[in-house]
Length: 192
Image (cartoon, rainbow, N blue to C red; front, top):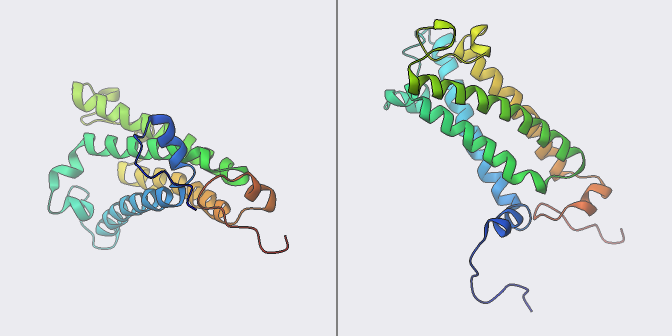
């Protein structure tokens, strides 16, 4: 007999959070990882356009920026992605336990900073008041590092602990496995 209810019940924010970190956790991590990898592809193509193909920085727009140049110039797009990342890390955090939870928390912490940098860029874009009198919106770290390199760095320092967290989550210790409530939890081997 199935434990599932016969009729669909409305999903409240609390139950959505619970569902994302239990029965939908593996699917949610998969979708989130796909979004992160698609974003990485954009930055890696842009880097290849600059350093391999020798394109100028304004001409190097990544995959989507080529047919839609306004995308690369939109602070709303960059901020929106940073917000989606922050929301994903926040919403999926309760599904990670033990060592995986630590690494997921590190990725979340770095993404909080990355999000704040994009919020600063968006506010400058909307107000026309640029940091330190610069001619374009400028983040705090961008005062020292060029934007393309900075975004590659931010994506790497968010992605690395995320990958470690997922790897540890999918290969938990026995103690961590017992703490897991999510769909990623594998049954204990027979006789264990």
